Length: 113
Image (cartoon, rainbow, N blue to C red):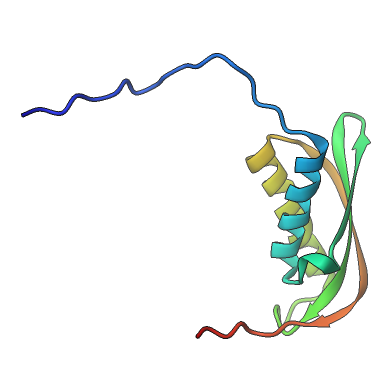
């Protein structure tokens, strides 16, 4: 008995569209993951910067998660995560990411039952 193989590449006509709401939710998730805070603590605004996305982020500083890093380093890491995530997941180019720290949150480890 032999098993037939499917063609290596199949082209199907159509289009993929990502609407503004989906981009907003994606950016929210990327920021939440990178900052290590709850989704409710994250605020994201998307705008246009000469054809690129401009992302404005408001997020609290998570204490306990990234010991030994400065706020500037955390901001750089957050910017990088947003730029890479939007590029890799939504094929969007981000021209700027503004990070505004709004407070402090203690991060707590999750308990596994």
